[in-house]
Length: 132
Figure 1 (tube, rainbow, N blue to C red):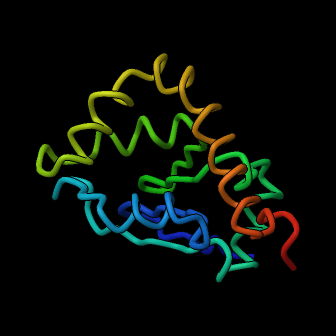
Figure 2: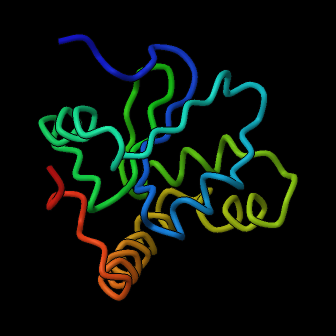
């Protein structure tokens, strides 16, 4: 089976039913050096979700970012996005300030992921793993 993600550029795989994830990806500005950026809503791409799960990348535990075919998950994904984000916009500056440090990203990411799970539960939306 061929890889569903592009070999070049940046791909961001996120939960489109999570208001925080969707808002973040809509406002994300990546520097031109990142190349073409592809956004994938994991809920609308079950084959991609299954394939990433087979690789051990649990989208309920964190988003996935692929840069030129190399995959990053969770805190590492946020760190990569922070490093690729431009300095324009409040969200990008905040993300860069917080997640440019891989150590800080790894320390903070579990709380962000827990907040996402709580938000989805409050909204009555099932985890990605519960979707066909």
